[in-house]
Image: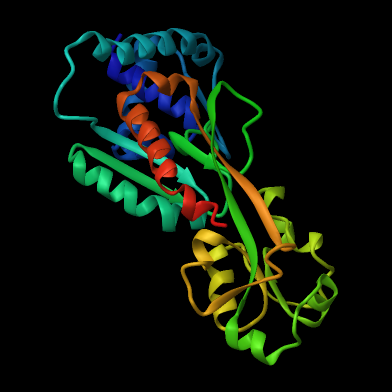
Length: 296
């Protein structure tokens, strides 16, 4: 049985779509379809049932899956038996992160990592939603909640601070804020409640029930730009807002929040050298950025 065909089978079983498997394998979706068809001809049985939401394993596919996974584990472990190469890690690693952290903190460091290792490529998915390891949307995920399900390896990466901010000219022309009750006289900028992907981004209700939301967005970058434009107050990560001299903290002792970044990867990825290299690098990056993430 052709191991290459089994690789295509495994990726389609994990992603459930031809496009997703093709992206993971770096080929066209037609190539994935052709490989699956070749394997099905060899086994003389269908491996997937084609449904509206993707490909579901057939009875034969479910029976084949454990053997294919065992072959993959052996194949991934083989490089560990060979002498180490001086070329460094190689291949594609997909990293999922929250929008602000991924864009402002991780992107410059990951760019330097790829310069250091020319055979390594990074897909950085800096998105305002939770990425699923189980669906192979990413190899490494940095999230605001500790994963509770699945066969995953998890580490607590770092805490970070958020404060309430306003644009300085906006604050000068609006009522002075010296206590929480004063916040009722101000407009707010926040997330769209029914589109929140984690409860860890709920802040405003802990301060005061606002009279008005001037703007709500799924994007923390959009919220930051709205604050800069003088539209109102918003809770923003310190690593994003403290770099901007036009913004000032409001009630810094009371309107202060601490959240945690968790890093996770599928347990099977512990044998993949490029994933391990990026994992270790990200831990180093966060140690370097501790003061920026949790300023006084």
